[in-house]
Amino acid sequence: MKKVGVAILGLGVVGGGTYKILTEHREMYRKCHQVDITVEAVLERDRAKAIALGVEEDKIAANIQEICSNPDVEIVIEVMGGVEPAKSFVLDCLRAGKSVVTSNKELFCKYSHELEVAAKKNHCGLFYEASCVGGVPVIRALLDNLQGNKITSMMGIINGTTNYILTKMATEGAEYGDVLKEAQKLGYAEANPSADVEGYDATYKLSILSSIAFHTKIPYTRIYREGITDISVTDIEYGKKFGYVLKLLAIGKNGDGGIEVRVHPSFIKASHPLASVNDSYNAVYLTGDSVEDVMLYGRGAGALPTGSAIVGDVIYCATHTNYRYSTFKNTEDASPSTKFVDNFESAYYIRLNATDRTGVLAKVSSIFAKCKISVARMLQERGPVGEDGATPVVFITHVTRENNVKKAVELINESEEVAKVAAVIRVVS
Ligand code: NDP
Ligand code: HSE
Image (cartoon, rainbow, N blue to C red; front, top):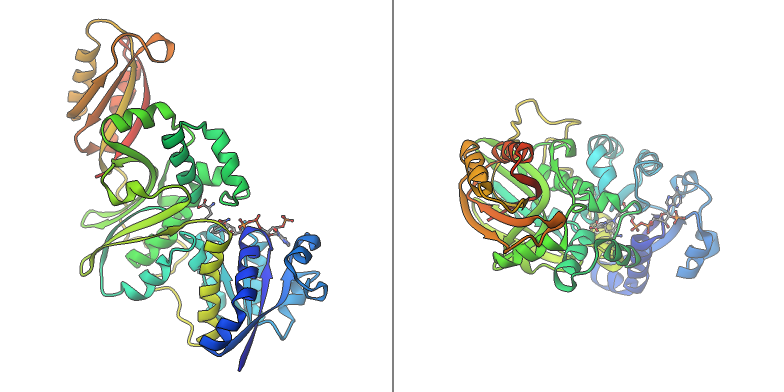
Protein backbone atom coordinates (compact mmCIF):
# COMPACT_ATOMS: atom_id res chain seq x y z
CA MET A 1 0.00 0.00 0.00
CA LYS A 2 1.24 3.49 -0.90
CA LYS A 3 2.11 5.54 2.22
CA VAL A 4 1.75 9.32 2.15
CA GLY A 5 2.75 11.50 5.08
CA VAL A 6 1.26 14.95 5.55
CA ALA A 7 2.14 17.91 7.76
CA ILE A 8 -0.38 20.48 8.96
CA LEU A 9 0.70 24.09 9.50
CA GLY A 10 -1.77 25.64 11.98
CA LEU A 11 -4.18 23.60 14.09
CA GLY A 12 -6.95 26.18 14.40
CA VAL A 13 -10.51 25.83 13.10
CA VAL A 14 -9.64 24.42 9.66
CA GLY A 15 -6.48 22.59 10.79
CA GLY A 16 -8.43 20.89 13.58
CA GLY A 17 -11.24 19.85 11.20
CA THR A 18 -8.73 18.55 8.67
CA TYR A 19 -6.88 16.52 11.33
CA LYS A 20 -10.14 14.98 12.49
CA ILE A 21 -11.23 13.95 8.96
CA LEU A 22 -7.83 12.51 8.05
CA THR A 23 -7.59 10.42 11.20
CA GLU A 24 -11.23 9.29 11.30
CA HIS A 25 -11.40 8.37 7.58
CA ARG A 26 -7.93 6.81 7.33
CA GLU A 27 -9.27 3.28 6.90
CA MET A 28 -11.69 4.41 4.18
CA TYR A 29 -8.83 5.95 2.16
CA ARG A 30 -6.81 2.75 2.57
CA LYS A 31 -9.74 0.73 1.21
CA CYS A 32 -10.97 3.06 -1.52
CA HIS A 33 -7.75 4.64 -2.74
CA GLN A 34 -5.13 2.12 -1.63
CA VAL A 35 -3.27 4.92 0.09
CA ASP A 36 -2.37 5.18 3.76
CA ILE A 37 -2.40 8.86 4.72
CA THR A 38 -0.90 9.75 8.08
CA VAL A 39 -0.21 13.05 9.81
CA GLU A 40 3.56 12.95 10.29
CA ALA A 41 4.06 16.47 11.63
CA VAL A 42 2.23 19.59 12.74
CA LEU A 43 3.39 23.16 13.25
CA GLU A 44 1.40 24.99 15.90
CA ARG A 45 2.41 27.70 18.37
CA ASP A 46 0.09 26.33 21.01
CA ARG A 47 1.36 22.79 21.80
CA ALA A 48 -1.60 22.20 24.14
CA LYS A 49 -3.99 22.65 21.19
CA ALA A 50 -2.14 19.95 19.23
CA ILE A 51 -2.03 17.54 22.16
CA ALA A 52 -5.75 18.07 22.88
CA LEU A 53 -6.48 17.00 19.29
CA GLY A 54 -4.56 13.76 19.83
CA VAL A 55 -1.28 14.66 18.08
CA GLU A 56 1.68 12.75 19.55
CA GLU A 57 4.23 15.08 21.15
CA ASP A 58 7.07 13.94 18.89
CA LYS A 59 5.03 14.96 15.83
CA ILE A 60 4.94 18.61 16.91
CA ALA A 61 7.65 20.36 14.91
CA ALA A 62 9.66 23.19 16.43
CA ASN A 63 9.94 25.11 13.15
CA ILE A 64 9.28 24.93 9.41
CA GLN A 65 12.77 23.62 8.64
CA GLU A 66 11.98 20.44 10.57
CA ILE A 67 9.00 19.89 8.30
CA CYS A 68 10.90 20.70 5.09
CA SER A 69 13.64 18.23 5.98
CA ASN A 70 11.29 15.47 7.18
CA PRO A 71 11.49 12.67 4.58
CA ASP A 72 8.18 11.23 5.79
CA VAL A 73 6.28 14.37 4.80
CA GLU A 74 5.15 14.46 1.16
CA ILE A 75 2.26 16.93 1.38
CA VAL A 76 2.06 20.09 3.51
CA ILE A 77 -1.34 21.54 4.42
CA GLU A 78 -1.13 25.29 5.08
CA VAL A 79 -4.06 26.40 7.25
CA MET A 80 -2.43 29.16 9.27
CA GLY A 81 -3.86 32.07 7.34
CA GLY A 82 -2.43 35.52 6.61
CA VAL A 83 0.36 36.38 4.23
CA GLU A 84 3.47 36.08 6.41
CA PRO A 85 4.92 33.79 7.58
CA ALA A 86 2.52 31.56 5.57
CA LYS A 87 4.02 32.65 2.23
CA SER A 88 7.63 32.00 3.27
CA PHE A 89 6.66 28.64 4.80
CA VAL A 90 4.79 27.54 1.65
CA LEU A 91 7.71 28.58 -0.59
CA ASP A 92 10.18 26.74 1.70
CA CYS A 93 8.03 23.60 1.47
CA LEU A 94 7.72 23.78 -2.33
CA ARG A 95 11.47 24.32 -2.69
CA ALA A 96 11.98 21.26 -0.47
CA GLY A 97 9.87 19.26 -2.95
CA LYS A 98 6.70 19.02 -0.85
CA SER A 99 3.32 19.50 -2.50
CA VAL A 100 1.10 22.08 -0.83
CA VAL A 101 -2.63 22.18 -0.11
CA THR A 102 -3.91 25.51 1.21
CA SER A 103 -7.14 27.17 2.34
CA ASN A 104 -5.49 30.58 2.40
CA LYS A 105 -7.36 32.74 -0.12
CA GLU A 106 -5.50 35.93 0.76
CA LEU A 107 -2.16 34.25 0.15
CA PHE A 108 -3.25 32.47 -3.03
CA CYS A 109 -5.04 35.49 -4.46
CA LYS A 110 -2.11 37.83 -3.89
CA TYR A 111 0.77 35.45 -4.72
CA SER A 112 -0.63 32.68 -6.94
CA HIS A 113 1.92 33.54 -9.65
CA GLU A 114 4.98 33.24 -7.41
CA LEU A 115 3.66 30.11 -5.70
CA GLU A 116 2.79 28.38 -8.94
CA VAL A 117 6.19 29.18 -10.49
CA ALA A 118 7.85 27.61 -7.43
CA ALA A 119 5.54 24.57 -7.57
CA LYS A 120 6.22 23.96 -11.27
CA LYS A 121 9.96 24.44 -10.88
CA ASN A 122 10.09 21.88 -8.07
CA HIS A 123 7.62 19.45 -9.72
CA CYS A 124 5.17 19.75 -6.83
CA GLY A 125 1.42 20.02 -6.64
CA LEU A 126 -0.31 23.19 -5.46
CA PHE A 127 -3.98 22.80 -4.51
CA TYR A 128 -6.39 25.44 -3.19
CA GLU A 129 -9.98 24.16 -3.39
CA ALA A 130 -10.57 25.16 0.26
CA SER A 131 -9.61 28.76 -0.43
CA CYS A 132 -12.99 29.52 -2.00
CA VAL A 133 -16.51 28.73 -0.84
CA GLY A 134 -15.57 26.32 1.99
CA GLY A 135 -16.81 22.80 1.31
CA VAL A 136 -18.35 23.60 -2.09
CA PRO A 137 -16.17 22.11 -4.86
CA VAL A 138 -16.30 25.06 -7.21
CA ILE A 139 -12.61 25.28 -8.15
CA ARG A 140 -12.42 21.67 -9.32
CA ALA A 141 -15.71 22.16 -11.19
CA LEU A 142 -14.27 25.18 -13.01
CA LEU A 143 -10.88 23.56 -13.67
CA ASP A 144 -12.30 20.25 -14.89
CA ASN A 145 -16.01 19.69 -15.31
CA LEU A 146 -16.91 23.03 -16.87
CA GLN A 147 -14.10 23.20 -19.43
CA GLY A 148 -16.67 22.66 -22.20
CA ASN A 149 -17.82 26.22 -21.66
CA LYS A 150 -17.00 29.82 -22.09
CA ILE A 151 -18.15 31.04 -18.67
CA THR A 152 -19.98 34.30 -19.24
CA SER A 153 -21.02 35.11 -15.72
CA MET A 154 -20.81 34.06 -12.10
CA MET A 155 -22.76 35.37 -9.21
CA GLY A 156 -22.30 34.07 -5.72
CA ILE A 157 -22.61 34.31 -2.00
CA ILE A 158 -19.02 33.47 -1.17
CA ASN A 159 -18.52 34.65 2.39
CA GLY A 160 -20.08 32.64 5.21
CA THR A 161 -19.66 35.23 7.97
CA THR A 162 -21.51 38.03 6.18
CA ASN A 163 -24.23 35.67 4.99
CA TYR A 164 -24.70 34.48 8.56
CA ILE A 165 -24.92 38.09 9.78
CA LEU A 166 -27.33 39.22 7.06
CA THR A 167 -29.54 36.17 7.62
CA LYS A 168 -29.81 36.87 11.36
CA MET A 169 -30.46 40.57 10.73
CA ALA A 170 -33.25 39.71 8.27
CA THR A 171 -34.91 36.92 10.23
CA GLU A 172 -34.42 38.06 13.84
CA GLY A 173 -33.80 41.80 13.45
CA ALA A 174 -30.53 41.06 15.26
CA GLU A 175 -27.88 43.73 15.75
CA TYR A 176 -24.92 43.53 13.42
CA GLY A 177 -22.26 43.59 16.18
CA ASP A 178 -23.88 40.79 18.22
CA VAL A 179 -24.18 38.47 15.23
CA LEU A 180 -20.58 39.11 14.21
CA LYS A 181 -19.49 37.88 17.66
CA GLU A 182 -21.56 34.69 17.14
CA ALA A 183 -19.95 34.12 13.72
CA GLN A 184 -16.53 34.46 15.34
CA LYS A 185 -17.45 31.93 18.03
CA LEU A 186 -18.64 29.49 15.37
CA GLY A 187 -15.24 29.70 13.66
CA TYR A 188 -16.55 31.30 10.44
CA ALA A 189 -14.83 34.68 10.65
CA GLU A 190 -11.27 35.54 9.65
CA ALA A 191 -8.70 36.27 12.39
CA ASN A 192 -9.39 39.92 11.61
CA PRO A 193 -13.14 39.93 10.86
CA SER A 194 -12.96 43.24 9.01
CA ALA A 195 -11.71 41.08 6.11
CA ASP A 196 -15.19 39.52 6.08
CA VAL A 197 -17.47 42.47 6.82
CA GLU A 198 -15.59 44.94 4.62
CA GLY A 199 -15.72 42.53 1.69
CA TYR A 200 -11.98 41.80 1.28
CA ASP A 201 -12.38 38.05 1.80
CA ALA A 202 -15.01 37.93 -0.97
CA THR A 203 -12.79 39.94 -3.33
CA TYR A 204 -9.89 37.50 -2.75
CA LYS A 205 -12.21 34.60 -3.58
CA LEU A 206 -13.75 36.36 -6.59
CA SER A 207 -10.25 37.12 -7.88
CA ILE A 208 -9.35 33.41 -7.71
CA LEU A 209 -12.65 32.17 -9.17
CA SER A 210 -12.98 34.73 -11.95
CA SER A 211 -9.34 34.27 -13.00
CA ILE A 212 -10.03 30.56 -13.50
CA ALA A 213 -13.45 31.08 -15.07
CA PHE A 214 -12.39 33.82 -17.49
CA HIS A 215 -8.91 32.37 -18.22
CA THR A 216 -7.07 35.55 -17.40
CA LYS A 217 -5.60 37.09 -14.27
CA ILE A 218 -8.11 39.24 -12.39
CA PRO A 219 -6.20 40.95 -9.55
CA TYR A 220 -8.31 41.58 -6.45
CA THR A 221 -7.32 45.24 -6.66
CA ARG A 222 -9.43 45.52 -9.85
CA ILE A 223 -12.56 44.32 -8.09
CA TYR A 224 -15.06 46.94 -6.91
CA ARG A 225 -15.56 46.30 -3.19
CA GLU A 226 -18.17 47.35 -0.66
CA GLY A 227 -18.81 45.48 2.60
CA ILE A 228 -21.84 45.22 4.87
CA THR A 229 -20.74 47.59 7.64
CA ASP A 230 -23.24 50.29 6.59
CA ILE A 231 -26.19 47.93 6.22
CA SER A 232 -29.04 48.50 8.63
CA VAL A 233 -32.10 46.45 9.54
CA THR A 234 -34.14 49.44 8.25
CA ASP A 235 -32.99 48.81 4.66
CA ILE A 236 -33.42 45.05 4.96
CA GLU A 237 -37.03 45.69 6.09
CA TYR A 238 -37.77 48.19 3.30
CA GLY A 239 -36.28 45.70 0.83
CA LYS A 240 -38.77 43.07 2.02
CA LYS A 241 -41.63 45.44 1.16
CA PHE A 242 -40.45 45.32 -2.46
CA GLY A 243 -40.03 41.52 -2.37
CA TYR A 244 -36.22 41.61 -2.03
CA VAL A 245 -33.66 39.79 0.10
CA LEU A 246 -30.31 41.39 0.90
CA LYS A 247 -27.10 39.43 0.21
CA LEU A 248 -23.42 40.26 -0.14
CA LEU A 249 -22.95 39.22 -3.75
CA ALA A 250 -19.77 38.61 -5.70
CA ILE A 251 -20.42 39.20 -9.38
CA GLY A 252 -18.21 38.46 -12.36
CA LYS A 253 -19.21 39.00 -15.98
CA ASN A 254 -17.22 38.37 -19.12
CA GLY A 255 -19.05 40.17 -21.88
CA ASP A 256 -18.32 41.93 -25.18
CA GLY A 257 -17.61 45.18 -23.34
CA GLY A 258 -14.99 43.60 -21.07
CA ILE A 259 -14.75 42.08 -17.64
CA GLU A 260 -16.91 43.32 -14.79
CA VAL A 261 -16.01 42.21 -11.26
CA ARG A 262 -17.62 43.50 -8.10
CA VAL A 263 -18.48 42.63 -4.51
CA HIS A 264 -21.23 44.59 -2.76
CA PRO A 265 -24.48 44.22 -0.81
CA SER A 266 -27.28 43.55 -3.28
CA PHE A 267 -31.02 43.18 -3.23
CA ILE A 268 -32.25 40.15 -5.13
CA LYS A 269 -35.81 38.97 -5.70
CA ALA A 270 -37.02 36.60 -2.96
CA SER A 271 -37.70 34.05 -5.73
CA HIS A 272 -34.07 34.06 -6.96
CA PRO A 273 -32.23 30.77 -6.19
CA LEU A 274 -29.57 32.68 -4.23
CA ALA A 275 -32.17 34.33 -1.98
CA SER A 276 -32.74 31.14 0.00
CA VAL A 277 -29.03 30.58 0.67
CA ASN A 278 -28.87 31.36 4.38
CA ASP A 279 -26.59 31.26 7.43
CA SER A 280 -23.05 30.09 6.67
CA TYR A 281 -24.23 28.44 3.46
CA ASN A 282 -22.69 29.74 0.24
CA ALA A 283 -23.59 29.25 -3.41
CA VAL A 284 -22.15 30.10 -6.78
CA TYR A 285 -24.43 30.52 -9.77
CA LEU A 286 -22.51 30.09 -13.02
CA THR A 287 -23.57 30.58 -16.61
CA GLY A 288 -21.68 28.87 -19.43
CA ASP A 289 -22.34 28.96 -23.15
CA SER A 290 -22.84 25.16 -23.30
CA VAL A 291 -24.17 24.11 -19.92
CA GLU A 292 -26.30 27.25 -19.42
CA ASP A 293 -26.95 27.64 -15.67
CA VAL A 294 -25.30 25.71 -12.84
CA MET A 295 -25.61 26.41 -9.13
CA LEU A 296 -23.21 24.92 -6.56
CA TYR A 297 -24.35 25.12 -2.96
CA GLY A 298 -23.09 24.13 0.47
CA ARG A 299 -21.42 25.26 3.68
CA GLY A 300 -19.04 28.11 2.94
CA ALA A 301 -17.15 28.07 6.22
CA GLY A 302 -16.47 26.01 9.33
CA ALA A 303 -14.03 23.35 10.48
CA LEU A 304 -15.40 20.21 8.84
CA PRO A 305 -16.83 21.72 5.60
CA THR A 306 -13.48 23.40 4.90
CA GLY A 307 -11.60 20.31 6.09
CA SER A 308 -13.64 18.37 3.53
CA ALA A 309 -12.24 20.51 0.71
CA ILE A 310 -8.69 20.25 2.09
CA VAL A 311 -8.87 16.47 2.38
CA GLY A 312 -10.30 16.18 -1.15
CA ASP A 313 -7.19 17.95 -2.40
CA VAL A 314 -4.92 15.79 -0.24
CA ILE A 315 -6.41 12.60 -1.68
CA TYR A 316 -6.12 13.96 -5.23
CA CYS A 317 -2.52 14.96 -4.61
CA ALA A 318 -1.68 11.62 -2.96
CA THR A 319 -3.12 9.63 -5.87
CA HIS A 320 -1.95 11.76 -8.83
CA THR A 321 1.57 12.77 -9.73
CA ASN A 322 0.86 14.47 -13.07
CA TYR A 323 0.14 17.79 -11.38
CA ARG A 324 -1.83 20.30 -13.36
CA TYR A 325 -1.61 24.00 -12.81
CA SER A 326 -4.04 26.85 -13.42
CA THR A 327 -6.09 27.00 -16.56
CA PHE A 328 -5.71 30.78 -16.55
CA LYS A 329 -2.83 32.93 -17.70
CA ASN A 330 -1.25 33.16 -14.30
CA THR A 331 0.66 36.39 -14.55
CA GLU A 332 1.59 38.72 -11.72
CA ASP A 333 -0.81 41.37 -12.95
CA ALA A 334 -3.72 41.62 -15.37
CA SER A 335 -2.89 41.37 -19.05
CA PRO A 336 -2.72 44.86 -20.66
CA SER A 337 -5.34 43.60 -23.13
CA THR A 338 -7.92 42.89 -20.41
CA LYS A 339 -10.56 45.59 -20.42
CA PHE A 340 -12.40 46.18 -17.14
CA VAL A 341 -15.89 47.69 -16.98
CA ASP A 342 -16.18 50.10 -14.02
CA ASN A 343 -19.26 52.11 -14.98
CA PHE A 344 -21.46 49.04 -14.81
CA GLU A 345 -25.21 48.74 -15.26
CA SER A 346 -27.61 47.99 -12.41
CA ALA A 347 -30.95 48.90 -10.92
CA TYR A 348 -30.73 50.67 -7.55
CA TYR A 349 -32.53 51.01 -4.21
CA ILE A 350 -32.12 54.58 -2.98
CA ARG A 351 -33.39 55.63 0.46
CA LEU A 352 -33.64 59.31 1.26
CA ASN A 353 -34.35 60.98 4.55
CA ALA A 354 -36.38 63.85 3.13
CA THR A 355 -37.58 66.97 4.84
CA ASP A 356 -41.38 67.00 5.00
CA ARG A 357 -42.21 69.92 2.74
CA THR A 358 -43.52 70.81 -0.70
CA GLY A 359 -41.31 70.45 -3.74
CA VAL A 360 -39.01 67.73 -2.41
CA LEU A 361 -40.17 65.02 -4.80
CA ALA A 362 -40.15 67.46 -7.72
CA LYS A 363 -36.54 68.34 -6.93
CA VAL A 364 -35.48 64.71 -6.60
CA SER A 365 -37.29 63.82 -9.84
CA SER A 366 -35.52 66.60 -11.69
CA ILE A 367 -32.13 65.36 -10.40
CA PHE A 368 -32.98 61.79 -11.44
CA ALA A 369 -34.03 62.99 -14.91
CA LYS A 370 -30.82 65.02 -15.27
CA CYS A 371 -28.78 61.92 -14.33
CA LYS A 372 -30.71 59.62 -16.73
CA ILE A 373 -32.30 57.67 -13.88
CA SER A 374 -35.82 56.42 -14.33
CA VAL A 375 -37.84 55.38 -11.28
CA ALA A 376 -39.57 51.99 -11.36
CA ARG A 377 -41.15 52.01 -7.88
CA MET A 378 -41.41 54.35 -4.93
CA LEU A 379 -42.48 54.16 -1.29
CA GLN A 380 -43.02 57.09 1.03
CA GLU A 381 -43.75 56.74 4.74
CA ARG A 382 -46.50 58.94 6.12
CA GLY A 383 -45.22 61.79 8.31
CA PRO A 384 -41.78 62.34 9.77
CA VAL A 385 -40.88 58.87 11.09
CA GLY A 386 -37.29 58.49 10.02
CA GLU A 387 -33.94 59.57 11.40
CA ASP A 388 -33.77 63.22 12.58
CA GLY A 389 -37.53 63.60 12.17
CA ALA A 390 -37.20 63.23 8.41
CA THR A 391 -39.53 61.32 6.13
CA PRO A 392 -38.06 58.19 4.57
CA VAL A 393 -38.62 57.94 0.81
CA VAL A 394 -37.44 54.85 -1.01
CA PHE A 395 -36.95 54.56 -4.78
CA ILE A 396 -36.24 51.51 -6.90
CA THR A 397 -34.79 52.62 -10.21
CA HIS A 398 -34.80 50.98 -13.60
CA VAL A 399 -31.42 49.78 -14.83
CA THR A 400 -29.01 52.67 -15.15
CA ARG A 401 -25.25 53.19 -14.88
CA GLU A 402 -23.19 53.37 -11.70
CA ASN A 403 -21.82 56.84 -12.49
CA ASN A 404 -25.35 58.21 -13.05
CA VAL A 405 -26.29 57.18 -9.52
CA LYS A 406 -23.08 58.57 -8.01
CA LYS A 407 -23.82 61.92 -9.67
CA ALA A 408 -27.45 61.91 -8.48
CA VAL A 409 -26.40 61.16 -4.90
CA GLU A 410 -23.97 64.06 -5.02
CA LEU A 411 -26.64 66.46 -6.34
CA ILE A 412 -29.31 65.33 -3.86
CA ASN A 413 -26.95 65.74 -0.92
CA GLU A 414 -26.11 69.24 -2.14
CA SER A 415 -29.77 70.24 -2.45
CA GLU A 416 -31.50 72.16 0.33
CA GLU A 417 -34.85 70.38 0.12
CA VAL A 418 -33.60 66.89 0.87
CA ALA A 419 -31.88 66.02 4.15
CA LYS A 420 -29.62 63.28 2.88
CA VAL A 421 -29.25 60.07 0.93
CA ALA A 422 -29.36 57.46 3.68
CA ALA A 423 -28.64 54.33 1.64
CA VAL A 424 -27.85 53.18 -1.89
CA ILE A 425 -27.99 49.45 -2.60
CA ARG A 426 -27.74 47.79 -5.99
CA VAL A 427 -30.66 45.65 -7.11
CA VAL A 428 -29.51 42.63 -9.07
CA SER A 429 -31.77 40.68 -11.40
P1 NDP B 1 -7.44 29.94 12.99
O1 NDP B 1 -6.97 31.25 13.48
O2 NDP B 1 -8.52 29.22 13.69
O3 NDP B 1 -6.21 28.94 12.87
C1 NDP B 1 -4.92 29.30 12.50
C2 NDP B 1 -3.97 28.47 13.32
O4 NDP B 1 -2.65 28.66 12.85
C3 NDP B 1 -3.99 28.89 14.80
O5 NDP B 1 -4.02 27.74 15.61
C4 NDP B 1 -2.69 29.64 14.95
O6 NDP B 1 -2.16 29.56 16.23
C5 NDP B 1 -1.80 28.91 13.97
N1 NDP B 1 -0.67 29.72 13.55
C6 NDP B 1 -0.72 30.95 12.99
N2 NDP B 1 0.51 31.39 12.73
C7 NDP B 1 1.36 30.42 13.13
C8 NDP B 1 2.77 30.29 13.12
N3 NDP B 1 3.55 31.24 12.66
N4 NDP B 1 3.32 29.14 13.59
C9 NDP B 1 2.52 28.17 14.08
N5 NDP B 1 1.17 28.23 14.10
C10 NDP B 1 0.60 29.36 13.64
O7 NDP B 1 -7.82 30.16 11.45
P2 NDP B 1 -8.78 29.25 10.56
O8 NDP B 1 -8.52 27.83 10.77
O9 NDP B 1 -10.17 29.76 10.67
O10 NDP B 1 -8.31 29.70 9.10
C11 NDP B 1 -7.08 29.24 8.57
C12 NDP B 1 -7.03 29.58 7.09
O11 NDP B 1 -8.13 28.96 6.41
C13 NDP B 1 -7.17 31.08 6.77
O12 NDP B 1 -6.39 31.35 5.62
C14 NDP B 1 -8.65 31.25 6.45
O13 NDP B 1 -8.89 32.32 5.59
C15 NDP B 1 -8.90 29.94 5.74
N6 NDP B 1 -10.29 29.49 5.74
C16 NDP B 1 -11.00 29.47 6.92
C17 NDP B 1 -12.29 28.99 6.94
C18 NDP B 1 -13.09 28.94 8.18
O14 NDP B 1 -14.27 28.59 8.12
N7 NDP B 1 -12.53 29.27 9.35
C19 NDP B 1 -12.92 28.49 5.71
C20 NDP B 1 -12.08 28.54 4.53
C21 NDP B 1 -10.81 29.03 4.56
P3 NDP B 1 -2.49 30.70 17.31
O15 NDP B 1 -3.95 30.56 17.59
O16 NDP B 1 -1.63 30.32 18.45
O17 NDP B 1 -2.15 32.00 16.69
N1 HSE C 1 -14.18 33.90 6.82
C1 HSE C 1 -14.54 33.12 5.70
C2 HSE C 1 -16.04 33.20 5.50
C3 HSE C 1 -14.13 31.68 5.89
O1 HSE C 1 -16.73 33.64 6.42
O2 HSE C 1 -16.51 32.87 4.41
C4 HSE C 1 -14.37 30.84 4.67
O3 HSE C 1 -13.53 31.21 3.62
